[in-house]
Image (cartoon, rainbow, N blue to C red):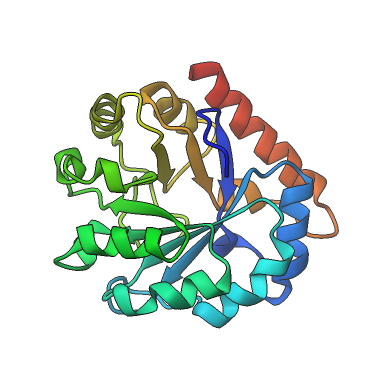
Length: 228
């Protein structure tokens, strides 16, 4: 993964057809997705249950771009090697998921992946101030984690703070939750460069009509790039 600050659209396959993941991943990549975002939920840290390491490993052969795996689980550390083996390029853990996020980020990098740290809406930007040298990506949640399709929570001030704290470091700012043509420009203008979009990408399309995915991705990208 080469670092760049251009706008990247990362469709969340939580909004894809669960019976057809391979073709769905191929369709969104063919239609312009930059990354593929995989939401891992444990029914404990968040009130939903999604993908384990074996599912992520099954997705991997279909992902030709970047597989961005977001762990909404607690604890994290004992699963890091499993997700590395599954083929994650970026592995993101929540700062709220355990008492030793510094050690978690070290372990993620030690397993050969890019290390991400996620912040829930109620967690301030300052929580990651002393983690920046260990972090490749900061994921700002603009919904409370656990379900797709929630209403966007404005985190503009937090994103601005993070962008200022990051300075010239090679750290991505990712936004997860409620991204569409209306909210993406707000986050891009504040300094985000990776936009996770679920229903806004998949709505109205299918593997039989993938051009809808392409139109949705292009519209979100154009809106964000116009503001960045």
